[in-house]
Length: 336
Image (cartoon, rainbow, N blue to C red):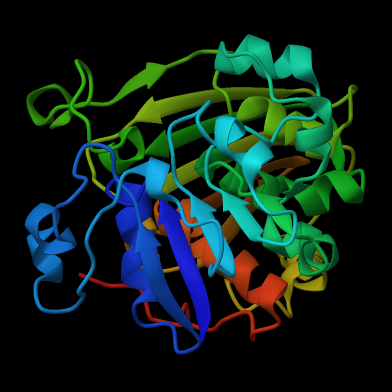
């Protein structure tokens, strides 16, 4: 049994890791931290786990120096980079924050408003979008887990960019549920503000944008990216609008995505428009499209706490540890 540590286990991403890993047949959660709840049992903070786990939160200062095989870092941006330099080089590390996702230091500072990690530490991390970086992840010891918006958009656009189908810019409209804002209430995240509402935020400045442009890397095909807060709890619904350099049929679009993702268990092609309700509480990404007279709309949906965070982190762990990729993750979405 691989021994697992979770730094930052009381946030939504951390508790999602707990919920996945407790049913994983080849791992055991050996240590979990929370500064706010240090000393408390996990069921005191998350009563839905009562009777399922005998875990107690520790302060981060008590991170074990040995005995762990895998360490998940589910900490606020800027915290992982403080911890990583002191960790064993052989320890498998999967960081769920944005600290090591961006290769260019100036771009990191611009979008995260933090001093960047050292170039040496940043280069030691592989970008962890599993379906696009599988072989690099398999041989890595450190992985920077992607952002939820970036995962939805990169999986939707990657085949089109690779095949040079797009003419001109891509316009992205991406909506997220309230759990994406974390479990600390804020002025625009509490229920009276978000309920029955829809509003944009961070125009041209969302921190997941440089992840997208870094991987797609086509200056003549800019990505215009806008995020919205939506009145549901879990999920990302991303719409991508573009002009193509040629006229294609719906079947040709479906064939393209089948050629890229046909063997990927967690990517599902949906005829027409997917529904965010049909991926909730799962690691699946549903992608669909519509085309007319040389224009294309591609939709992608995922659960922001699963494929957008903890589920993808466990998927990456499975690769790095030599487990079957779907282990602990092949549960059906919950609907209704």
